[in-house]
Image (cartoon, rainbow, N blue to C red):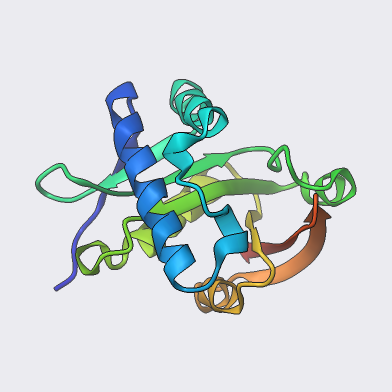
Length: 175
């Protein structure tokens, strides 16, 4: 069964769901041997992350994917500039002619299947309608399955960087 996800701007009441989705995604990453990707602590326990979620919502950067019952299954954060943590040299190369996905996450449950793809395709449409050539994102370079997932969606790796020991791969999709 395919779920038609409604992608809508996140509002302040969605912060709790974004934190819950982030926590569930972190547990999934830990269970699958990817502790270095997001860390081992639940994001909801990190004051900096909680503040970041509020900022994403107030700045209009966050969207949520909801089902027909209004339940949130995932979220994405997007914008017109490279993420602030990206290596400045890589960011300078990447800044032109692109729209960015800063983060995307889902509950990682069977009933949430396809939500990540839907959020990425929504972001691709945002990029297209803003008149840029590429949708870009970065991911943990050591997660080969994640990189393959993005490649299956049509992304190609275009750059790499290291941020405080965290290896990132920059991927782009021509929109």
